Image (cartoon, rainbow, N blue to C red; front, side, top):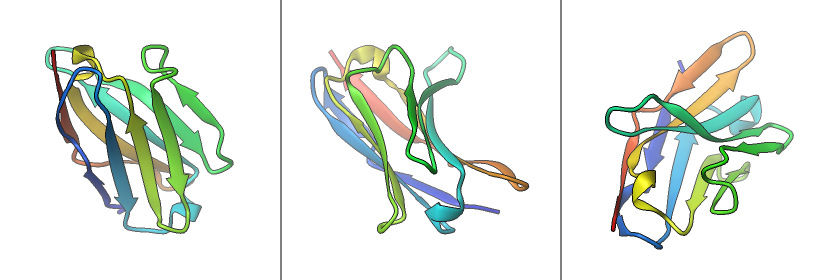
Length: 116
């Protein structure tokens, strides 16, 4: 069982920035794909951004140009830098880790609230 410890959520005004962090309990080098999802009240969970072990990235259209996903192998941490935040970015953000032959793991989530 891989544990994922998320941090960095909070309350920010529109136009501001936040950086989310996710530290897995196992070496990040053994994880094939990591991603951030979010779920807003009354809405389905959606993919925000993902990054593979080869550092390929993919973003939801709604965050392209504003969010940056990265992984620091030395610090064993996944990041999501969120800039130019909008009220519609308000959601619980979840970190995920996919490992071949072991499956997909989810963190407990961190709340991001953007005030207008």
